Image 1 (tube, rainbow, N blue to C red):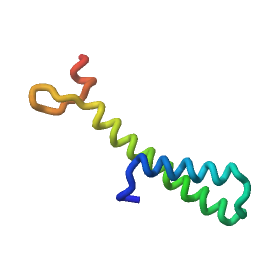
Image 2: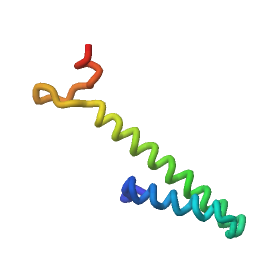
Image 3: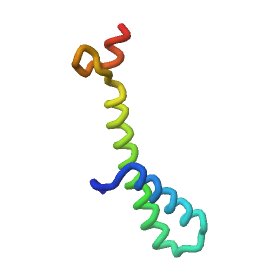
Image 4: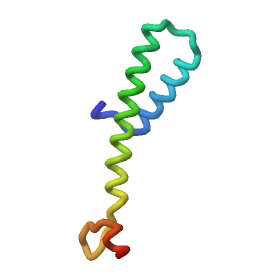
Amino acid sequence: MENLSFEDAMKRLEQIVSQLEDNQIPLEKSIDLFQEGIELSQFCHHMIGSLEEKVAKILVNQQLTDFEEKES
């Protein structure tokens, strides 16, 4: 999953949800898809957390500074 982009992970999650909602796949395959979906969800959550940290910083005087520090 390391080389997977956020967008590709989300597309795959959408495919998994669609397949699970269809109810036309065997139970064993459903469980495998569910597990893959959980892993993709955790991957996306981690990526969002990392990006939130980057967004929380702004460039001030040639240095990255926490936005909260600037507001004080």
